Image (cartoon, rainbow, N blue to C red; front, side, top):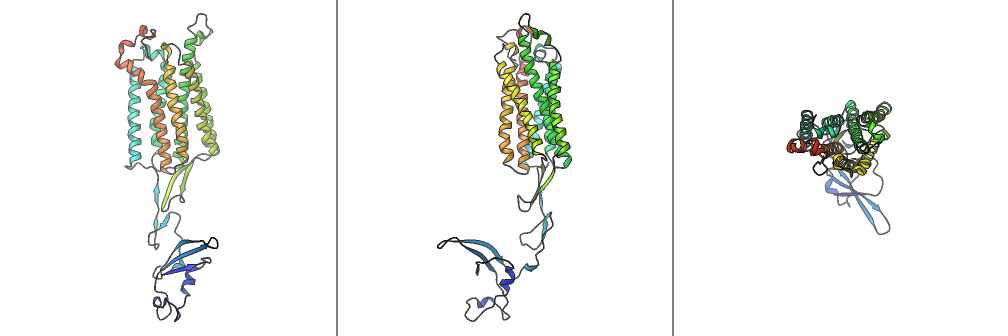
Amino acid sequence: MLIFFFASFYKLSRSLKKLRNTQQSKIQQYYNEDNEIITKYCIKNWVLLNEVMIQIHHVGYFDPWVSDSEKCIKCPYYEWPNEKKDLCVPRLEDFLSFRMEAITIVAILVSVLFYIKTVLIIAVFILFRDTPVVKANNKSLSFVLLVSIMLGFLCVFLFLGRPLDITCQLRQITFAVLFSVAESSILAKTLVVCIAFKATKPGSRWQKWIGGRVPGYVVVTCSSVQMVICLLWSSLSPPYQELDTHSYHGRIIVQCNEGSVIGFYSVLGYMGILAAVSFIIAFFARTLPDSFNEAKYITFSMLVFCSVWIAMIPAYLSTKGKYTVAVEIFAILASNAGLLGCIFFPKCYIIVCKPKLNTKMCLLDNRKIVG
């Protein structure tokens, strides 16, 4: 049976119960002898758009046999009505947990795999630390970069599990600082390449900078700027746990609110500046003689890094809940893997697979050396 209303629906159920049958009514069979409704109603709202067009909206159903609709009880904040609308049940919490979900499994496997690879590369560099290939590319900066990449793979685990205020702060600050240290190391390595080439010219003033403390100053200074930004962010408006009960019915999205939007994008923006400067310097230094051609691999690594994070921003803004976290996790994994693969895999190939090229003579031979 259909009942159509053109007015408001205030106190709709009372209006329905006050209906009375008449002898001319065609719905007499739906009332008992006391004129009480004993049937369900399909309620629709007809909206007159113009003189000839009517739009019909389905409003709902009226069931005289349900727990009394005039005495509806609003469910508590953490609960939701069941399908029969006669009981409040707990809402499901939605976050990227450690349970055996496909996204979590892939993230953990990739993170652990590349962590192990990074540890192996560190072991190779330690064992062959006195060889020309390791020395030629500033082994101190290489170790700093490798350690920051290794810890970057581990920081993925901060993004898994139920978000808390402390983990929301740690995940962003940790990843920001580690990536800034990595990018500062890459920037310092790029400057070392340029200084080393300029110092080869007779009487060059750049010779006094060879083996100096410039790379260390670059790493400390550039990393400190990011630390200051993170300190201000965490002091003024830090990230915190947020419960989203409006995006999905029956589910509570447990997520991290970034707190200060300015702080969040300042961190990303500074990372972008470091990556852009490193890319530009390495790009112009890529044509230097092969003895110093680490700039070529830095160029590729920064190209991968920038591409990943540029693609990450629209994906990050267009997703919600655990999928937002998944986007950030895979951006961290992809960019870290790009740095590791582009900068260190060629060197490890020479050290492990082509040891005959790992000599001082080959290092100075532009025809043979490749890293």
